[in-house]
Image 1 (spheres, rainbow, N blue to C red):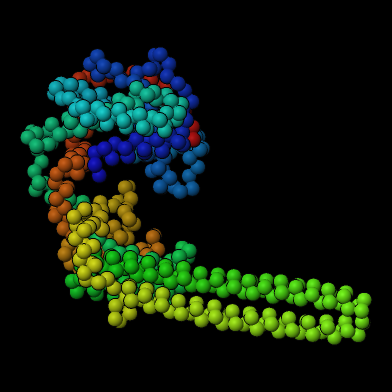
Image 2: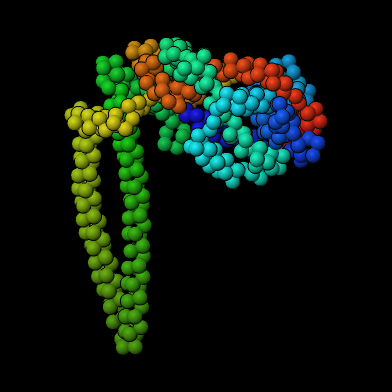
Length: 476
């Protein structure tokens, strides 16, 4: 993930937390700042921002341990603890640590003589204005002003500059490719996979027979993968197979709907014709009554018999013609579809020429098409795309080895997973991905450095602000 996307993700996470909370206080003059580093004061709005983030994290952790927890019960929440500390203490310590790092890194940025580029400044302005336009109401009600918000966005850019000064190319803690490769191998798995759904088109779980058919299909694809068939081609093949199934289902639905409509039309025609005949009979009767009562009966009977006979004959002829035309068209369409998406054995197929053209075109635009780089999951951080698949990607799949079938009840599917060599992902060794990887690798070490800088700079806190901005004044 790029650096800019990391910033956006942080802001969105905070904004999400703020959609749930609204502070009950506003900044007073004596509590307008929360910390001081050298001669620079840190706005209390920045502390509140980090406090809401910490409170959201605390709530998530508590709910994870107890899904039945009523987070709106303040009295109950105050009795709970995280890592041996009550919620208030845990949240405020986390928020003050963030503020301390914020102040120290900003000071170090100036001390090192670093500067933001014109492009950085433009991005900061654009990002700040964009997010502020959406979330200003929520932020302001929590005591976070526009200036504080802009400084938070700006801080992430400054932090990257300071970090790279130490860990980037030429830095005193420069990290080489071998270290990055070792980290990637231990923490990430590069995979391609096909998900075979164990649900129908409406999302209902398949019965045992249908499930067995899906498993059989997955085994067939595994055999093809293990025999050396290109996995991208298999993905395309399965996509075509699903498209064909969807097309057949849609055609079947259309056919049933069409038959129902035709039946309704025939019934309507019969009713309409019967109505016409009745009107004709009545007219004939009315006319004949004035002339000859005996003629009335004869005329009426002949008219009714003749009309009904003609209607029946015409309907039968039209239905037969329509049926023949529909059957012929249906046979032609089915033949065309079958020819297009199946091979000589009736199995899903992609012509070699079309497959090669598609693959070459995709490689030109994305050399890593259909790939997922999964981070090793944990109970604390969760698992992507699910616990079963994530664990299999690290524990069961071997780099360059056979594909593995994983049953995933969490996502109602079977996954055919192939593991590739993550070190061969060149994009993780350059540009923004390299920076993001380095910042992940040395996150704790850098944070400890920032804490030492803060101590050396003599960062101090405004106790009045710390007491005033109680996380439990944030109301859910």
